[in-house]
Length: 199
Image (cartoon, rainbow, N blue to C red):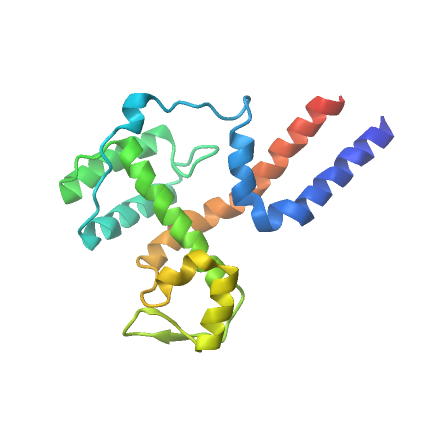
């Protein structure tokens, strides 16, 4: 039993340092696909649902502000940034403030797009602290060499070369704490899976 426990600890540490720290968002999708964690609830009617349109940039800003307010009210679920009640509140508030009559799934789709863009932006910036700012383009002011090197690493960031990520402060409020908490949740779940396998 002590040997088995040591092996489980070693595996957890290997996963933490080798996978989770740098790639845990991708790993989250795999874990959520596990039969004990996630459920495939997509029906044909959901798949064919009309995609929400966000043509007016102010609608996205309003959406981000409302999301950040809900999160900071500590209305969080376990594996999501918002609980069912938080999403219900958001549907009502978005409709009240913008006139958009979108349901939870349509808002969640927007949430996912914004989160993906936020992740790409943060990978692009990385740990560079000496970057300038181009106020005209509202994006990073760096040499062509820097951009060429970074776009080889993060190809999806090419859209930010000429226009930066909008609503950055709100997106940080929406996703930064959730991302940090996610690492802890992934470790807990991996430990549970390992425990089931060996005990």
